[in-house]
Image (cartoon, rainbow, N blue to C red; front, top):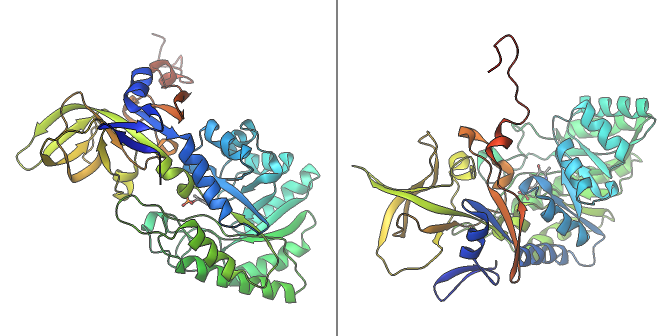
Length: 420
Ligand SMILES: *Cc1c(COP(=O)(O)O)cnc(C)c1O
């Protein structure tokens, strides 16, 4: 599942002791395993062997350039949700024709950027966006390749913040609206209809929601065909879940079986947008215990990583296993693992039964490769942490720890307040 293992009681990432990385980079730091990243990408892609497919890694799960570059070299495409991600994708070497662009609020400058670069497909999420795309394409003398993102109204049975395919969600266009959208698209001079798309949510641990969503999409594809609207691509989104605790998500091959089964009888080129399932278990957040404290009601392990570094526990009450970097035979304790930030919501683990960890010792917050660093902020003026990639017995700092100077870059004090 991943390449973080103990050797003689000490945690290694592949052939590198975590301690060696910490000596070079300090704490906190994100640590990624090249072998795990590679294996997960391959396993996912191979599950669809025989299908005409493009695996567009979903950049927002982890946007580090080294990770993007790795998947580009493995033949992947890219799923982006902003102009910034397009910029990163191009900087990492992706060709624009392998990039699909989703998002409910694409802005004019982002649309123009993507049109100029010539991306594979805009996954359009509203009729107004479709009209704007047509206008911008006309202005720039381009044709905009589009898929409509359909909201199939299925319950992905995941956390409400990461459910995206229900009628009450802001994403996509409902099935009736999509039919109208395709009809309209046919009449717009600078729009070329290429496909159909959906993405119903994230951390989905059953196959049924995917099957139900696709059934709805395939129904639409048939209706469109009857109307003489032929599509080339079907983009089934991402969302496959991973094991954080005791979940049992479908394996990539099981997921692929569900997808391929639902697509029987169509001859569309398949686009997939996996994020979490590729990078989630390939990363850990390494943190050091600063203090221990026993309150009247609770025991606290205070560490140097915080909600600004990894917000998932605070935001979704997400579970991340916490492992000691050096195993001991000490008794178990029940504690909250908390960071230095001035919010009670700042925790990495709550009421966790864990091995007793003392001041100065290192902990690994597991399964932090997805939506970890990419959601990090500078809250409380905490510089964002270093990111390190290990391959075999080598490692490389793929993003330097931010400095205090980085924190105030771009800020300036106006004359009407007065110079220092
Ligand atoms: C976030 C996102 C994904 C990736 O989701 P995962 O759960 O990480 O696989 C794919 N497609 C779109 C449109 C997204 O917004």
